[in-house]
Amino acid sequence: MKKYFQFEELGTNYRREFIGGLTTFLAMAYILVVNPITLSLMDIPDLPDAMRMDYGAVFVATAVAAAIGSLLMGILAKYPIALAPGMGLNAFFAYTVVLTMGIPWQHALGGVLISGIIFIFLSLSGLREKIINSIPAELKYAVSAGIGLFITFVGAQSAGLIVNNDAVLVGLGDFSDGNVLLAVFGIVITVILMTKGINGGIFIGMVITTIVGMIAGLIDVPGKVVDSVPSVAPTFGAAFEAYSDPSFYSTSMLVVVLTFLFVDFFDTAGTLVGVANQAGLMKENKLPRAGKALLADSTATVVGAIFGTSTTTSFIESSAGVAAGARTGFASIVTAGFFLLSLFFFPLLEVITSAVTAPALIIVGVLMVASLGNIDWTKFEIAVPAFLTIIAMPLTYSIATGIAIGFIFYPITMIVKGRIKEIHPIMYVLSVIFVLYFIFLK
Image 1 (cartoon, rainbow, N blue to C red):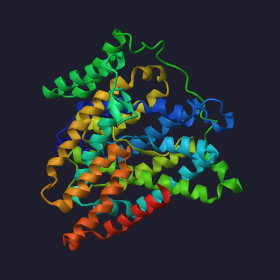
Image 2: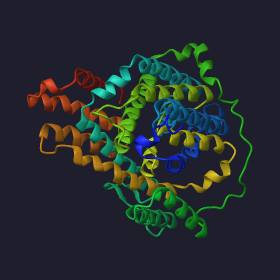
Image 3: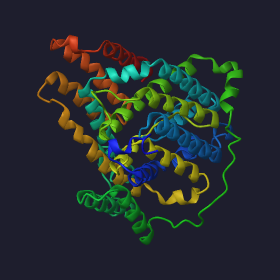
Image 4: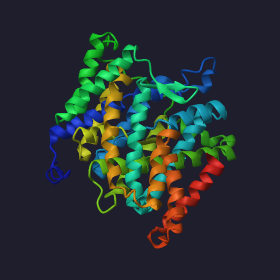
């Protein structure tokens, strides 16, 4: 096992990998609650039952897709990157496709399944790997830093540290709120642990924050530990039902499938590059075993669609596990194991609130923006696309959009500067695709 995952070469051990895998699970366990709420449209009153996916079935589908995806990533690609149904894509699935466009959720699942199958073929052909490896080093560093800012913003927002402000878009949260104060406490204690160089500082910080939250009455103590596993029957195989309905074959469904394809492709690419860069796994500006990582990602999407959930993708919260010491795919296997266990221990997941996860995400953001130092800011033709990539991610709340904007400007500045020969041909193609994306899909 140690030899397969190259423990010695990467300077790791079972303890660090276990803590890293557990930290990643805790950082992304919210998806087990948020995804069923989102896909069942629980927060939208007075909807016909036919528009709502079954909450319990989606919970099981979410856990199974995350477990299989993370397991494949760990075994095939050997990366400490976990997968689960992606945020943003699930919102697009529920609120845009089903609620706004009026497309049945069974059809939406059928669209996800088609996008996953297309991704499998693209991964096996090596095209996705070639695209990732064609991205210049400076933009890969920018993607990593941008994700760091993005994940910090997500963490701060989820904990109420940053809130909506109609006058200036965002503003400071209510620091008289107990949950906000608990998040601040978590940040302080995690910073202290990390500054002192304590291994697993992020994970320990989450545990301490949870305990303090229970003592303060801000986090409920679970009434029970084990519960029965809900039935997945209401959603399992529903994607195949869509193909027998003539209304499935429409222009609107084509747009939906293309959107699933585009966002998942570049969200995954950004996550893989960002986390691998943070873990020091990039070699000569290339991501080793990228094809296997992408195959794991696309296979998980197919499995998730069959079980009954939106697109499964690599989770940027994996960076929390890397920060806790994870360096190999063994950590992803650990994360997969916890997702399977969560099927039986759902009540315990209620203690993992946003106040607990926010400090981890914010500290991870600090670690990820370190890649800014690798960008040559004195070269304006590099600084512009790099900066736009970085700043667009938190401002647009989208990794894919940040990548798109930066990649459009990169060929422009490089051509004007006379550095045409340094531009990979694929970057021209991507630039055109991104322009078309903003015109027709965005």
